[in-house]
Image (cartoon, rainbow, N blue to C red; front, side, top):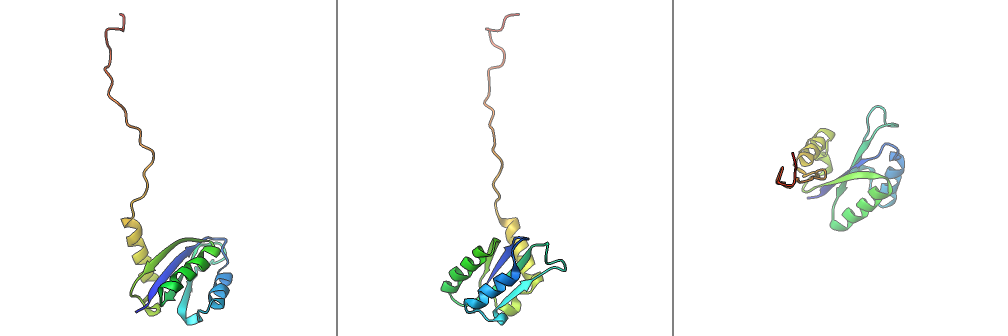
Length: 121
């Protein structure tokens, strides 16, 4: 069974260029989906590509990188027919919640002796 590589792209990224790059690398238009909002000129968009072998994963990640991808997700044992927007969004949300995000710098206070005999009244 194939895998799905999904990518979330920056607002200023051109989805038409990405489509052209994918097709120039050998993908058919039936092997990828571009998910656009109604205002596709000023919003992020997502793309899913059906991956049939490991070499294509690296090649597709490279194409995504050249087109300002923000984050990629690999879903194993999934076909392009199962890659509906709602299904992928649900899986991405679950993965995002499971990630451990870096915490801010933590400063640890050391215990001090408080007032001592050096303090004069």
